[in-house]
Length: 173
Image (cartoon, rainbow, N blue to C red):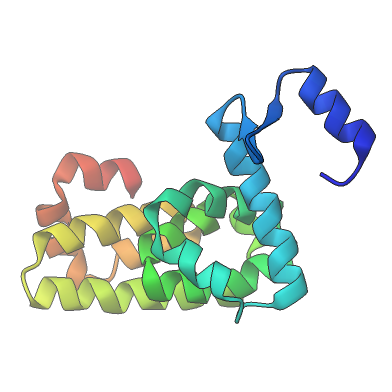
């Protein structure tokens, strides 16, 4: 917040304050939104190799700012974020795509669907029911044709449906 007018307006409205040299927000969602804006600016300046992005992806506390980032980033930046997020947390990557699938390129959606399909096959082959549930959830949260394709793979669909729970599977498929 480098603009004095914006700062004064936000502080006057009770949205944020500066106490003991720390910026405090009146609501967590405001903090998460501004964290997302900070991530976007930092990524645009430093690129995906920036250590702060890697740290954010690895910490659950940053999930909401990363989801908000997915909503405010340009389509090009959003496309570039999906693969590194999926490498750490494919379920979060599915949620990032699902916020607005049309803003994510078809190639990126197909890549994530293929990634989840491989993970689902691994989970089924290793009888990892918890992982099957998480992958089914992630594919459903993609909210696009590619995500639904993960759920209908012939070699895994029957197991996924049984292990994820038929009611849950119907809700996302």
